[in-house]
Length: 68
Picture 1 (tube, rainbow, N blue to C red):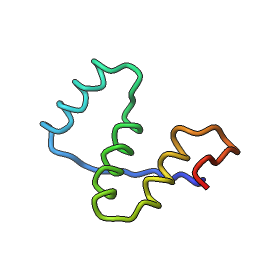
Picture 2: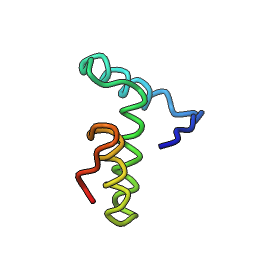
Picture 3: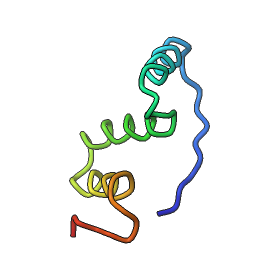
């Protein structure tokens, strides 16, 4: 799966809340937080395929697809 970089501005209160979350959850990072937020938004808009792609990308071992 190809990845792209995103540059985005956000209000300082959003940044502060996310930074606080990340400090208290060391297993998370900015990329995971933004990807998850985008998934939650898009999952409300798109069919199951989007969720399937996210699960494959983030949780399944490379080369193994248990969802097909």
